[in-house]
Amino acid sequence: MTVLISDRDVAAALDAATTVQAMRDALLAAHAGRLVAPPRASAALSGGRMVLTAGHLTGEWYGYRSYDTFGHPESEQLVVLHDGRTGAVRAVAVGEELGSRRTGGLGGVAVAALARPDAATLGVVGSGGQAWTQVWAAAAVRPLREVTVHSRSAARREAFAARVRAELGVPARAVETARAAVAGRDIVVLATTSPTPVLAAADLAPGAHVNTVGFKQVDRHEFGPDLLDAADVLVTDSPAQAAAYDPPMLAALPPYADRLRDLGAVLAGAAPGRTRADQVSVFCSTGLAGTEVFLLDRLVRVAARL
Image 1: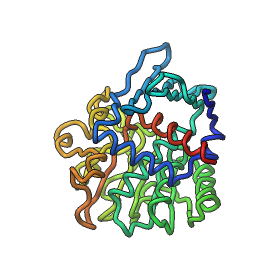
Image 2: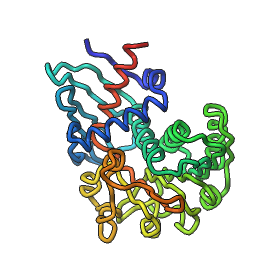
Image 3: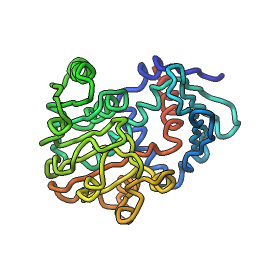
Image 4: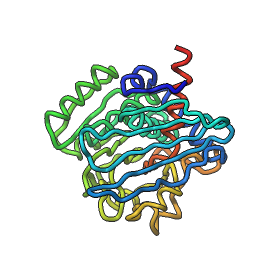
């Protein structure tokens, strides 16, 4: 029987710790060659694109995600999970919550692997759903004692800070500039729709870890080359997807491409992560293909035990 999953079901079944663990397992499976996840494909449509990502966990399942870039309020993502032996559709998820938590979970894995063990303060630029799941996941892997948030809308950043206090139990305050949000922070999250840099690398504290979620291509980027120049440790969740960006992703171009490490390899001990407390580490999130299906499979398994 096919299980239909709504955003409400996702929110009820997937807590941050479960999501981060699932994404850690997915990255390790990809590094080991068990999760086969080619770069995303797209088809041009009038006014936007339809995008497809697919994944195959060998011997267990295969599936895909589809979404569009129209930005229409009624547009929804679709994630489909097939049984790898029979081809039967095990589950279908419709909505935004699964993909958003997937991206947050990947960010949580990056924080766990790359941020200093004593990291306890977080500054976030952005106040949308992606910004929220990044903080949500980070709070599951580090004992945060304060969150600072900036976004263009004063009302939205105040509401975001209130949500952090109410749902995560972490002191949080809204600030008037991006610089104020990130200054002195142990962990920094950039989750904006800005096509131009929202911070300067000089604003970062020594030893900071940065998760970047928004635009990162040569023609539009929420951070500039100065952040990549400052990075002692530069990591992504999918070097293949980073190289396949069109237009190209900044971190996948010279002189940065040779320094760009695979987060799965860092987790497996095959590539170095942070080696000193004063190093700046940067995670450029691409959204490893197949991870939404991986998370849907985990959700179905968790729900079956409830």
